[in-house]
Image (cartoon, rainbow, N blue to C red; front, side, top):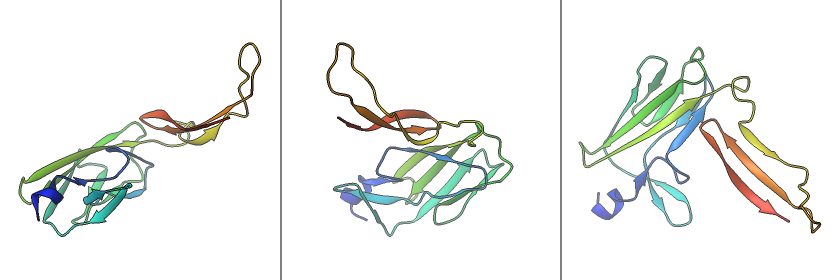
Length: 139
């Protein structure tokens, strides 16, 4: 694999952490991150591992499965060793349940009224189990 491709390898195009519910499966396969937020599959020898090993498994193609009895708040670290150390990637997977973190998901405010008058505006948020970030703002 060309060095140029190795330099673009990643788990996903939107950062390097994930969230999952107990019993959920995630695709954590490594791919080349290209223009305009596209993850392209690559032909490479990748060895995946997960820590702690109890409560989650990962297979040879990067499919991570969280056991159904994993406690919310558990954090797993997934490592992908590409071509025997040529590049090593890590990511964290935060486990949550709707009961333990009811704000995870997409929600929006009905309106905000500015002080002193002016137009009303709304903000959409995407809340994550490991934090939150604005998704869009519209007037």
